[in-house]
Length: 276
Image (cartoon, rainbow, N blue to C red; front, side, top):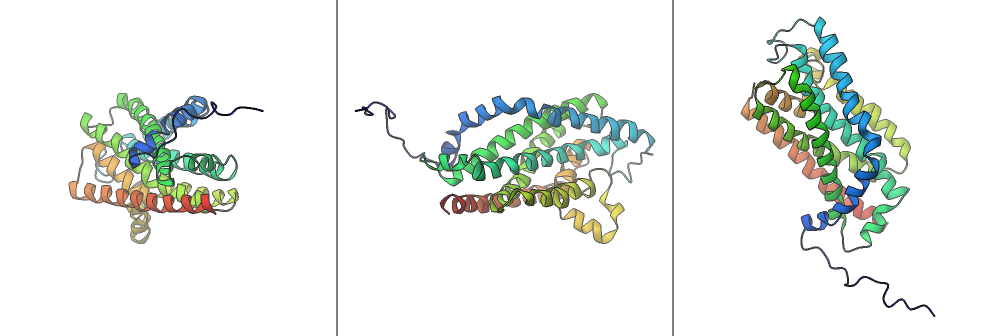
């Protein structure tokens, strides 16, 4: 007869004392995921954005007549497009990390079910995954901004520093609704919808490559309602030193409320999915 008396944990598992402490208990898991997967994301995270800046900002931008009055204060097309591409890069990371990986953890690998079998709750799981997403995005966008620095497109060092921190808010404003979507769908074919009708139109028509005023009055208002335009405009104001503090506060509030509401809904949806 096998004796299992000494095979269990030395001490029984205890519930975490708070939301953050519970999320931190998953730190070793996400560090292990990062150590085993970082090589696969090097090209898309670092090399591809650099190629976009080189092709669109430097080479194509050389044919654009720079007028600060029409480029929202930028004295070159590269200075205009670079901050927008940083914010769009944060959004792209949110889509890539919160679609198939989230769906796989609830449908294919069923890793969430093993997590919820411990004293952790759905709120701990969601917060830990969003924390990992934010740290990964800040690192990627930090490298992006460092690459752009020699081109002389930033006005102040502190503006760039704040713009870098803003990317953490931008990625949460996208990561939480995309995670909610991934937890709500029944089949992975739905991701084609969110990529084609969500990410691509947002990238093209939210002020990343041209001022949204070029879209006309109606489409301009629609573009300004998108979270990416909020992030792009905030990042651009900080990078160019042309800051409207009242508008910046609205951008922060918009992105923060969106992230908070969708975080709460994602926690509820994950809890429902794990007990269904």
